[in-house]
Amino acid sequence: MENEKHYMVLLVENNAGVLTRVSSLFCQRGFNIDTLTVASTDHPGISRITISFCGNDKTYRQLIKQTEKLTETKMVIPIEPEFGILRELLLVKIETNPENSEQIKNLAVNNHFKVVDQSVGCVVLEMTGEPSHIDLMLGLLKPFKVLEMCRTGVTALERGKVTYCF
Image 1 (cartoon, helix red, strand yellow):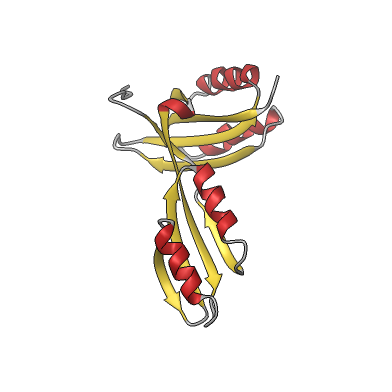
Image 2 (tube, one colour):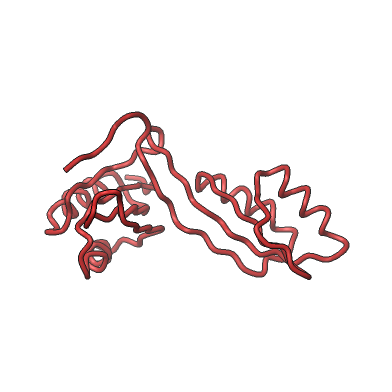
């Protein structure tokens, strides 16, 4: 069984400790969470947790069943990439100088980066996209000196009019 990237969304009660219980469930089973995002939803008292991790299908199904058993879990939604919208935010600070600033500007314009800060000696670029696209764009930045970068982790919704109510 091959390890592949999996995504799941948990709708949970917004209680103290719920994130610890969810992450502990993964840890106890020997899985590393690749990305994890948490935010409130339009329903008071309900938070949305999006998790990505690598594993085989059997383990993925097992983790879905076990997260469903957590007291605070209202719903577990497996997200299949071909039926979902997966997005991640990247902020990257790049060192600039007179020799490379035009090249960085062109790279930003041609690759859908947004310049969010331009200071003496550096520029901060922002991009939102699928995780694989973010990886590709980071590859384009390798010739430059990256001073800092951060990624938000994946957030996901299913395509179409599918919604989840409690």
